[in-house]
Length: 345
Image (cartoon, rainbow, N blue to C red; front, side):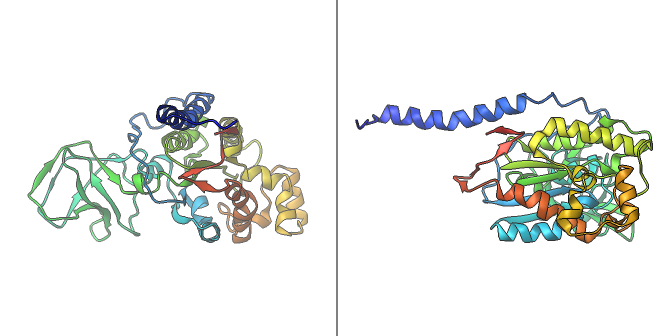
């Protein structure tokens, strides 16, 4: 029997087909424990949701040096999958700095006078977070009439500078004005890998001090991103069971595995299980075997005491990340057929 839909019925079917996935995603996010209060950054305010960028099929990674070390092989994977790529990993950044560069929690500037043209020194609630030696960051001052410009660094005078994009009249910029990087809208719809928190690990830090960055980034990205993965951290060469930072990262891993489910990329588990040796074709040394037996990351895997070597970094991309990306399936009408948080979207 052939069924004909009248115009009203067809419109209703379209509305329902759009609404159901949205409801499912909302229910899925609610199934996770509520994001804890941000004890490490009480002034943190997530940026309001904005329409996702229309450009299709992008891959972005955000984080510190661990994320930065994955960018070269990830860029090639993105090209192989027909995706654009943005590398947002930068060594030394902690949670607040990464969120500021993403645009998830924009930097707040102190009051200053904006000149008609040219750079002006500015100070903020966040001393680091935008490169002092690398690129300038395009964005805008979040004023009633936004002012586009760049946030950069004056190496000679050792101060942060804002330079407006278009000359205009002088303006008194009030305290607490946000600088919102263009990245906040350019990459918010991408398939995104976030790796926050490693540089928040100290001997006195708590689990909450470390995990709030990934939680905040994930919650901010979830409404608009095609998919979000959380990159698990690994323990450093000189850390072992019983050492405060090692035990802290063990607790962080447990927390994030439970919270993010199949969206969690378990780097530490891959290494300590011995699977990494098999995947990489590495014959473990006697020292490596002793390290694995003691639940330490093997000596052969390190470039230095804090960073994995190039072969292991490429392996993380090839064996842990690329299969996840390939498994997202075809993109149809801007929606990735994927799972978020271990539950069907």
